[in-house]
Length: 317
Image 1 (tube, rainbow, N blue to C red):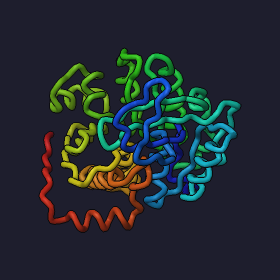
Image 2: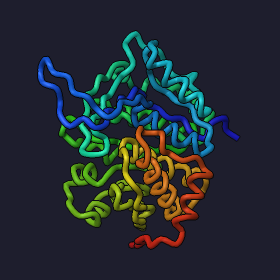
Image 3: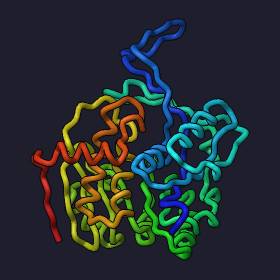
Image 4: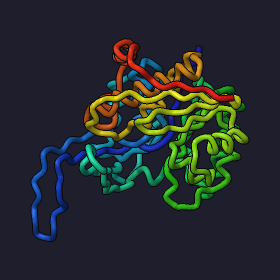
């Protein structure tokens, strides 16, 4: 038995969610909005919280400021049983992202803060020996590719499985080295737009064909439409669930957590997709990236309620 089901490395920050902001103030003006709420943010932090809610034992590797926001994030993680002892302290303030109108086309104002100091060097490899699985974020293409490859191979040598969500490439390069990384990672996540950029393909079947040459297990998230998992060349699609949308922040991270929960529970890909779609759907029903993410009981109740709903499923070899 391992001490941790999963160790997560990556970003954690504060999300300040501004609802009902119909215009930005001009110089000297004040704009009144419907509400402002503070939540834990950052893809790695949201993934960790979602997995912890599902009952898995999680440790978090990241970096936070020694300010009130940093303590807020730590306390919130501790509330859900996440081991925060591997979080390092920074002299910088904790990062903040202001999300404007999350119920519509979101806009963001972001201060990176302590997240700017993130690196794979933060991952305590001694802690990896205590875990079944490691989830990685923060891939920045050419900038840290070599570092990523070294760490992923070190994790593999220690006997843990790995997953990664590469996220958006804000450099615009869409570095082809990603395919080398795919070949070393056990479960690889990306959304459809990211997959289009990396592969140069526009259709999902062409994307799958291209990625299958490099990865034996990858997932392409299709937003509210659903997701496709391809394992050893066989693809399976499950459509998403229709729910009232309040805030889409963290939906992809919640999906990842549901899928990895299934993966670590030894479930088949079609069941992992079902868990992922359920967690992603429930996460958007409340404001904040982790507020709506379900615990295991809530996820199972949701799936029971939706058992008779028509969902699209297809397979291809």
